[in-house]
Structures are given as C-alpha cells and as structure tokens.
Image (cartoon, rainbow, N blue to C red):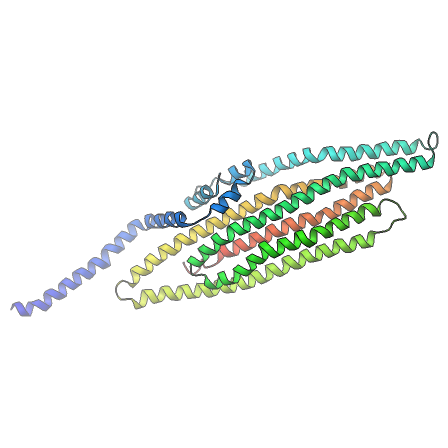
Length: 396
C-alpha cells in the first residue's frame, strides 16, 4: 500500500514545490517591482563613473548650474524621480539676464564708435572754413583707425569666446561619450556602439579641429580684407573677401551635413539591429529555459529598464548642459553683430560711407562664428538624442 502511494506523494510534492516557485515570486515581483527597479538604478549609478561630467558641470555659470539642478548627479536623480524642477520660464529668464549682461559689456564699444563717427562728421564739416582737405583726410584716417581698433577689440573677444566654447564642447563630448556608450553597451547595443564610436571621435576631434584650424583662419582673413577694403574707395577687395566667407560657410555646411546624415543612418540601423537581437535573446530565455525562463526574463527586464532610465536621464541632462554652454556665447555674438549693424545704420546719414561699410562687413562675418558654435552644439545634441533613442524598443 505504501509503495502504491509513493508515486502519488512524490507527484504531489513536486506540484506543491512548483506552485510555490510559480506563485510566490510572481506575488513578490508584483509587490516589489518598483523597489527592485529603484535598487537597480541606484546600484548602476553607483557603479557608473561620471566624475568628468561633474567637473565639466562645475565649469558652468552658477545661475545655469542651479537651474539644471546644482550638479550632474542631482539633475539625473531628479529626472529619474520625476521631481526635476527645471522650468522653461526660468531658462528664458536666465537668457534675458545674459542678454542684459552682454549688452552692458558691448555698449561702451558701440558708443565709442558712434562718438568717433560724430567727431569726424563735425571735423569734415569745418573743412571749408578752417581746415585743408589733406588735414581732413588725415583726421578721417585717424578716426577710421580708431574705429577699427575698437571694433576689432570686440571681434577678437568674439573669436576668443567662440573658440573657447568649441573647445569646451569638445571636452564635454570627451566626458559624455564614454558614459553614454557604456550605458548603451550594457543594453546590448553592440552594433549601435560600433556605429557611434567613430562618429563621436570625429565630432569631438575632427570637426572641432577643422573649425579652429580652418574656419576661424578663414574668418580672420575675411575680416582683415573687410577692414582694408573699406580703407579707401581705391582699394577693392570685396570679391576676395566674399570668397573667404563663402569657403568658410561651405566647409561648415559640408562638415555638419555629412556628419548628421552618416550618423543618423548608421545609428538608426545599428539601433534597429540591436533591438531585434535583444528581443530575440529575451524570447530565447523565456521559451527555452524550463520553469525559470519567465522569471529570468522578468529580472532581465528590470535590469535593462534601470539602464534605459539612467541612459535617457543622463542624455537629457547632457543636452541641457550643451544648451547652457552655447547660450551665452551665441548671445554675445548676436548682440555684437546687431550692435555693429545698428551703429552702422545710425552713422550712415552723416558720416563717411566707409565707416558704415566696415561695420556692416564685420557684422556679416561674425555670423560665421555663431554658425560654427551652434553647429557643433546641435550636432552634439543630435548625437546624444540618437543614443537616448537607441535600444529602448528592445526593452519594452
């Protein structure tokens, strides 16, 4: 009798044990999935080395640091917790404050240029009564030289700001890409990482070097030709100046156009391949591992979800850091350019035509620096956003 009941008892025991494995973990998972996800996120953040990003974050102005969360880790944690306090109105308020500060810095130069133009107008009006034409021409040359000196001081400041901003963005890229690629690799984004790595190196090294080594010298050459070309009506350098300006703009358009096109095609194709591979791996785990396949798949999802959350939050903070980095330089360039145009228009009715022409030439050339800074920033943001969008579908 006992021998007959033994198989029944063993079968009942197996069913009981299986039901415990099948029922208890599911209930625990339902009750603590959020806690498990939070724990995984904390563990992954502790293991991630983002010290270089923290150092770069500290280089931002105090107002922008506070608007972004104080430091990189706090900003990421705030986004992860859904408690990020950033507001678009606060950012616009900071931009307005920046505009006011830049105007205050540029205004003395513009007032000086305007005063020199008025002085020359007064002196040239006295020529028929008190001064000879040669004397007036000499005074005009001195006034033009003084105006050029003041204007070029602002141009040099703009070039310095633009160059420093591009180098700063290159440093941010070098700090951000290892972190973002590490998170992408942790999601199984092997193909996407292989596609992004050379493009990121090209952006942080090749593009930045091309701008500082080629575009900036072309800008300087065009600026010098614009100043000399307006020195006298007999000096005609407008076409040569236009060549240097067009060459610089063509190089910028080619760099950013090709970069964004190649990056988008390679990145999206790599991300699609990784998403398919990841879903295939999850299906294999769930289907071909007896009993525990579903639980392993659920745990796999939790781990991957934590990495996705960190990757997306870090990418969003890095994008905001980029905007904060280029905001003030672009404002400075725009205010200086508009200021030169305004003063050139104001002095045109009563001053020598070469004065206004020189200011207009400088204003047009300065758009090159703004385009270079904005182009690098936008290309970097596009790269980060593509990484943020990569491999998310394989987790859902």
